[in-house]
Image 1 (cartoon, rainbow, N blue to C red):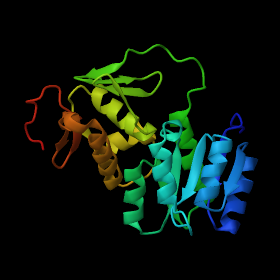
Image 2: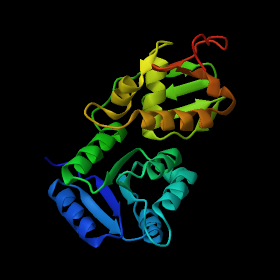
Image 3: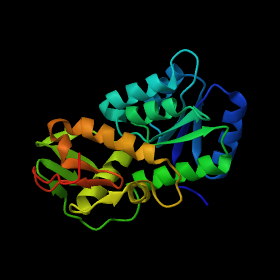
Image 4: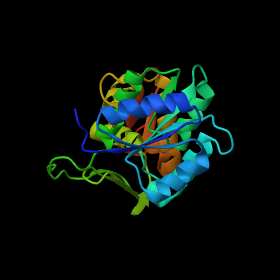
Length: 241
């Protein structure tokens, strides 16, 4: 199935893995660019903005983590979808990548089919060029407003930069109107069915959202042993922290 020529940048210093992934992505209908180090990746992105980046965290010179940090610090690339590649069992790397704003992660050694499925899932979440969507009213909670059409967030009438996963998590909580959503439910709503991530992944994303909400972080409440919910009023805090 062709994918409307979405552009993928693959960043990894393992030439054999890059060649194999590039072959499969091109066969699937993607336009693929590659980079073997962090600096080359940033130069490539400056020349031509991709639709998604597959980024290895462990590279000589400029690490993938530093590349991701720089992408998230620039307005033009703050919401660029990024899937990170981490070594198997290195949970610290996964948490660092997610904290910096990665949309998803895949552990090495990885199955090409699994990575392709993750790429498709992230692109589905970020695709704004599909059929015309119905006009949906913005979601509001106190000083926070989420535009479901443009995926833009405003807090105290100022723009807030969220990754697509963070936006989907936050909108799911606001749509629930105070009801508790389990971590499993949030995973499905934010990442789609069949995407396997740990509950720790959701916790890391919520922590990142709270950091961006600043003084309004308390509007996201943790329900012990269950999940999360949005607080409808400042005193709405029973059973929660």
